[in-house]
Length: 340
Image (cartoon, rainbow, N blue to C red; front, side, top):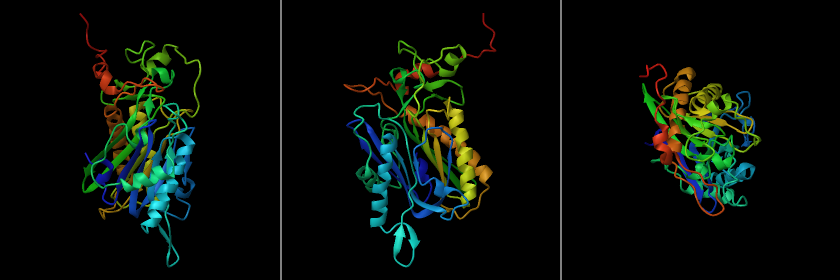
């Protein structure tokens, strides 16, 4: 699946630093893309999001950066700026000057390995060098390299997160999503309601099912603030205004709500950017694009954790992947079925 690069005019590149692991992912729009953003989590780390308010002047961006490394990872956007500048990509300011517009968002992965290793400007530049309009590698790459999920009861009971992408084409318009999943909550399959990856039981052998545990009164002794975050880009080749792109970003958060529970917590800085390249030449209602964006974003979340691999090793937390727990992710029994 091409995922986000199914949108004409977009390229995606990863930089993965295997020493920790951590990394960053860049989405490049060489011709610019109309953009909006919606921030729902209470611990966000962002750059240039105020510029995307529909009342403000600039309506096009030239790249979006998703990065690990907590606030340190915002440095990656500087490297993306340099790469775009070298390639003559940016907003025209006068006859010769171009200024690249590069919003960014980060997630917290500093408790995975050596916290002094985090994405920087060189990482962002390298991600641009690797960018392609072809198929996107998923799993523990780029911004999803150090991601984890199911952390409400502590990192020692968590599982591996990751990066995923998905797309759909309807009536001549394509809508796609790319997401780095690093949530405090569990990842849920909306079709079955079953946990795909998330908090494990105290002995690590199965899923705790965070919401079921909370309803039983199993309350964590300590809730970490700012220790998670899911960050995403949704995009379309339809023609949208800046206000419409902002609405699409808002609606796309419903995809996170369907596939992550709990979501938008005090410890998550969940951010969704929306891009519209207009490459199809077709106008589309923001309501329809937003509905599809939520749908493909939920799909991308599932793809992210299903493509992840377990993390083990000296100085690293023990984080199994969804693939290691696949037998436990079966649909729950039908509660309405008669039992013998």
